[in-house]
Length: 53
Image 1: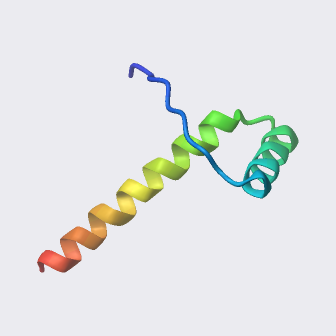
Image 2: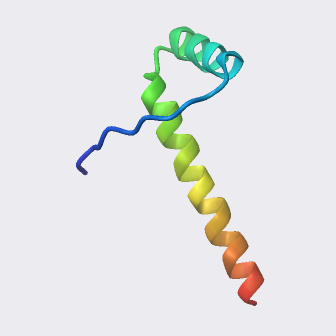
Image 3: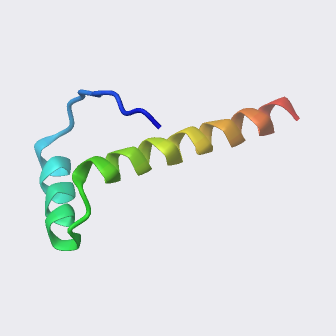
């Protein structure tokens, strides 16, 4: 799968916590952002299906 650059802003507090998590777990920060976005898409896909039912 091809990757694209994605730039956004978050609060300093959120950034600091995720950055520390990344350092502690040695998982790249970008992987956590990607996982969060994937989870968000799943959430809204299921909410859309429920609303259509």
